[in-house]
Structures are given as C-alpha cells and as structure tokens.
Length: 133
Length: 133
DNA sequence: CTGGCTGCAAATCTTTTGCATCCTG
DNA sequence: CAGGATGCAAAAGATTTGCAGCCAG
Image: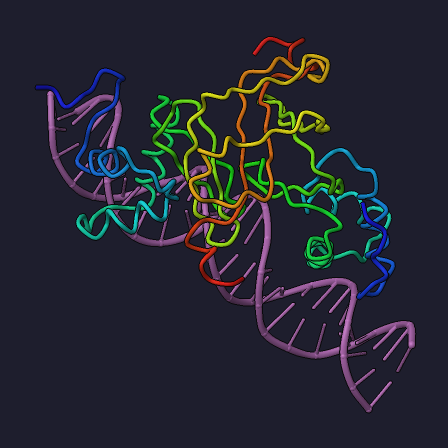
C-alpha cells in the first residue's frame, strides 16, 4: 500500500506519531507539548517537523488552532464546532459540546457576514477550587 | 476605561500619553501599535515602558488583554463585559455590546465555577466583502 | 536620599525559515 | 534521479528582564 493518504501527503513515521498523539486528545496541547511527549519515544523528532505537520493538518482541516492561551498557540484535534471552558488558575481547557448554538441578533452584526461562533467560558475548575487562591 | 488610575502609581508623561491614546480607542491595538503611534509625537518613548504600563493597567483593571489574535496580544480599554466580531480576512476586531448575555446550561459546567463569558463571532467585514477573496 | 520610572540592551520564548541531507519511489 | 520530508540552526517577532541613570517628593 502506498504511503499516502486520501488528502495528499505522505504518512511518515513522524507524522504518524503526531497524528496518533493528537487523535482523541483532549488536552489542547501546544507544539512544544506535542514535541516533548513524542520526542521521548522518538528521539529524532524535530520541533520544526511538529510545526510543519501542524500547519499541514490545519490546512487540511485536521485540527484547529486555538487562540485561547495568550502565551502560545494550542491545537485541538476536535474540528467539530464546539466551545471551551477555561480555568483561569491552571489554564486547563475543556471542551463544551454545542447543542445550544447561539446566533448574534441581526441588528448587531455591523454588516459582517458571520461564519462561525466560539464561546469561551472562564472560571475555576474543580481541582483549583479545592485549594485557596 | 476607569479613571481611578491615580491610586497607586504615578502619572508620568509617558503613561499619560498611553492612557490618552487608549481612552475610547476601539481598534484593540497591540503593544507595538501603541508604541508606533505614540513614539511619533513622543520620541523618547520606549517599548518596554509601553509593556510596563500595559501590565500596570491590566493589574488595575484599566484594560483587558485579548487573546483573539494568534500572533500577538491586543489590548482593549473597554473593561465592561462585551463580545467581539472578528474579520477573518483583515483581522479587524469590533466590539459587540452584550445585552443578550449567555449562560452555560448548568449540566454542562463540568464542575467549573463560571466567572465570565466571552463570545467571538467570526466573519467577513463589510470592507472585505467588497473585494473577492 | 530614596524609590519609582524610563530607556536601552540583552535575554526569552514561540514560531518561522533556509538549507543541507536523507529517503523513497 | 527528483521531489518531498526531516532536522538543525539561524532568524524573526513578541514579550520580559536587568540595570544604570534620572526625577520627584
């Protein structure tokens, strides 16, 4: 079988490692996070390759890039529309499935043609609530 | 923007320049944007001072930091709760006043204690709609 | 005089890019 | 051999930090 998938790029061992790490991952990892984990069992992995692969996946709609974290980009293998719960203490990010979709009242769109909506719910997660401040 | 800034820190000329530039500003400028504008009429302004002042304002709730732009932090002198319309082509960001506040259904909070909500509406602004792609 | 502020430069951190090398077909 | 992929290192951008000098109270 050809080492090529249906969307036009080669599935090299490095890319497979990244793909399998991301598959089903709910941690919204950064490029660095991904690199650290994968390079343990895959010493030749390069950070540049991680970024390359993430770009590739982004372009092919395999992942989405989150702008939630002010310090770095995070990536989400869940490309279905959904929202996020963000802990303001530990920066944990959890998915919130939609099912309560929300539209901007038409008189408020300022002439924009709306193509998507993302809601961020900020709060304190159960873990952090246990310890004061 | 809150004008209680006398409490706790000095209003130096540099800080006043930054404050007056931000006051009422609807452009959601980055630190660099602020620096570029102010340093024209204020040649001794330093980028570090811009960052220092922005940090100070952030701590005193005079501004909020937006995580909307993947490439850099942007700052918003409007500290009232509100949401944003983001043009995916030109990256323009416009305010959307609330008035349709939105709560996460209780059974979805995953144990988080919600403290705030921010909605991002993505779309194409009137200007960008004029020109194809 | 003292402490806070400024501005410069250096340092950090994240992300991108250039390029030589290495497959793989 | 050709083209894509990898990995290293350098570059680029944004932000932070260290520090000496300055200024106001």
